[in-house]
Length: 501
Image (cartoon, rainbow, N blue to C red; front, side):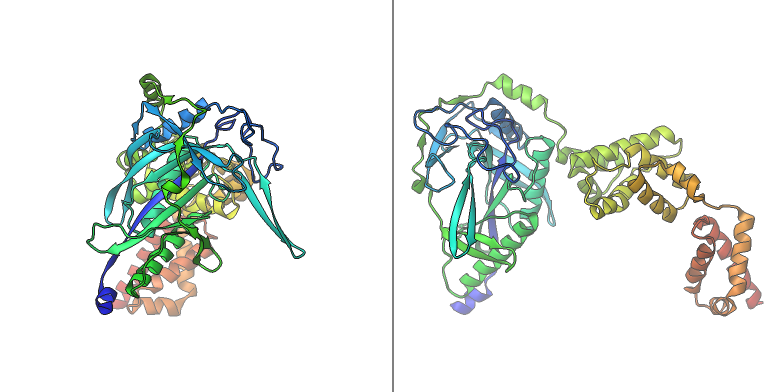
């Protein structure tokens, strides 16, 4: 029996719970300001409402509801005309009221989906529910001088929080990461969340189980918390899949539990045995009336939605002829997608030649991204404007400079903010295409390397690449490579013909 279990194939079944803080100016149920809890002084944005003082009454933040509706509509959910707030009861030091105001039986929205690209093609991941709640405070655990204690910061308590729960439709760590990335892009496009996992404003908690391949029954799930990067998300899911599969193969039972992720050790660690929904003793929040959403409001929010990443990706492949990979990289961040389209438009405006959107994409994804990553700068902060990049690429297409020189010019544009033509003129970077000069240069290189030329003449074709490099080096990289290649081919072919006679 154990041998049969060991040979059995398993599949993972994964659902996600995503908590995203909404970037409103005030908290969910009071007028306290929303502050960055990672840098603000502790407990400066608190009041009797968000600290749970007796006799206070919460009031719903309308802007938070609007932001939640944006997300729900972007995920193509069914919007509830009436939703109900509930009390979720549990006791923890960073939960000042002793309960969290959330939504349970009647959430804001249900039955949506998010489409992702996988190795097996396009997959539609179902969204079970989207609902509003309030965030908890923040605990800092201190260990010093043989003394341990915890500090409570309630700045974050009461911040509007959107919970997005997927169905268990994901099947691998790679799919989980893709889904999370796509969802983050949508939240950022909608301008409701920064997507900064390291600051905790977006928290992704996977629920993972495994089952025999082909089975319809769900296995015992384990929830992973405390994930502050997409790398940690992917690694923790992959680890749990392997761990649970190994447990079952060894004839053991998987225990339903909540675990954390130890990034240094690369393992999950037990936090607590998982609570069931009944443990929270949900009941309708007596201090808040039902939340009624008028259809006209929903329609106005829907009409104001921006073009979302999925639609933009499809348009980029159709309109600009980009691969799905290139389009996916460009549309992941709205600022990058906007930069790309502005560069395409700028090049079309200043050049009568055929515009090559693929070339612009290559330069942004390759050279510009390289500089942004090297100096840890966002595309909004770069000194190279879309129009500046277009001007640089026009110099390349007109043969004024070659590709290698253009890369050096781009780096100087990045550091100085100067336009491409000014840098080219000042540095004497103009590409040499003079046929007489290049003919003489090729002739000099051939004359200076008789042994290598002899090898080429007698059939060693790879020598031609080496000779090309010598010509370009002699020209300090400024010779037109196409003209050099044609002239080198001509002279080498003549030498072979002479030798054959």
